[in-house]
Image (cartoon, rainbow, N blue to C red; front, side):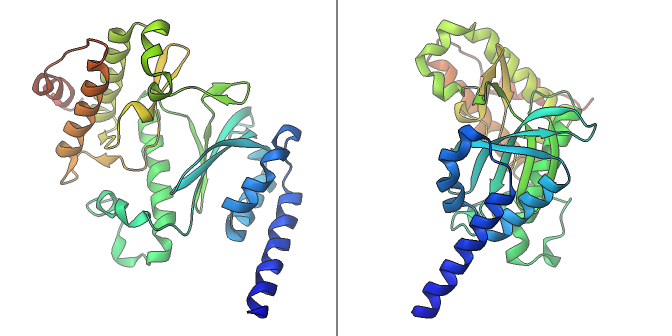
Length: 271
């Protein structure tokens, strides 16, 4: 028992040392305790490497925390040397919920899971989300610009201003109709879903009011980890689920569309 306590104290000291090495914005110091609670030593070492390479200039506050991942704000830099605000998404290396995501990995021809250990699955998932973001971004879909991924960390452009994230449709709730043309917004989201399918050859697979941000009157699709290629065995089922979620939410605002017609409009023929 005494040995276990000493090991824990030793690891905490190491975590504290890495936090000291990482520049933290003054206003983010209050979040230091959260950093200590949700980040393990391996992740802090990875963050430090990204910082040493110049991608992360200063860590800011906590944007969101969850069972699978935590998101933090940071001042950063892209590959072209431009200073940009970053969202730093960090998947928890140890999570009891990760097994639920297996169905989105198996069937993806981009990864040979036979050669990957269970411990490495989280790194594969991180790479998968990053590659999905790249495909979507290059296809002109409104998604955060992907910057870099390393181990269980994804750096992407921060969607929001003054270090405050843009609200999701869920955050806005009934206020949505007061800030935007709801029917027009629905059409824009469908256009992005169509672009995602036809140009990026992806289905979001987790699309709902919780994963669409509203920024500068435009919808931004986020959380692309579950997104699958259109040749995935469950792709059509996931697409239908995405559309049902959107129709359910926007139906509260009087938007009515036919599911079958929407699906046909999106799938069409590949461009």
